[in-house]
Length: 220
Ligand SMILES: N[C@@H](CCC(=O)N[C@@H](CS)C(=O)NCC(=O)O)C(=O)O
Image (cartoon, rainbow, N blue to C red):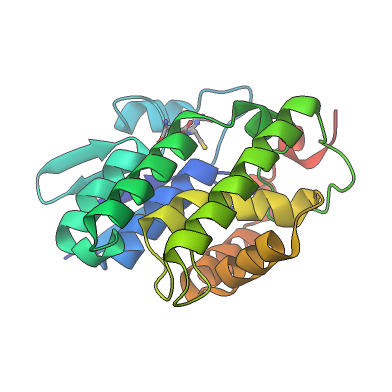
């Protein structure tokens, strides 16, 4: 028997679910994955019945209930502390950029929603989304310059919680194809190639047609 459950939405669309799921899998928690397809117009009643916020991801693990993707990342890192950088200053930076992701970039999220099965280029380039992309590219460049010398990820050789928080952004960039620097593109390629990200993509692309949501498949 597993130690709990992670509730997620459609892997094709649910960027927050992807973060929580990556955290759980990176930390190797033994939890059952429960996918609840989104109903539109939302909110999705079956999610509201289980999750305190009516949102996914939601984790139940050995008596603990955890919602909000960043809290799930922190909870999972209690079992795998190496998922945050060991160095205090690097760790402070990692937590700051993860929190910035959790709290912001609304324009990007609205204009370039996550759909891992579509090429929506060249749409979605609103001024607000482009400003968010500019900031994200600065975060990636600054983080990699200061802490990433040892490998392709934000803090070097290991894919950690900060990468998990930005992985769905990579999914948006690969689908909407905004202009990126070569360094940002290389980071996107490295994240996309990570085995857990690849598993998520494969599962997303294998979801049945009955799980497709018109709102996320068509441009306004
Ligand atoms: N701040 C939350 C955001 C979670 C969220 O917005 N989840 C969306 C899906 S990506 C959701 O559950 N929506 C419910 C619905 O669409 O029915 C987190 O970090 O976990």
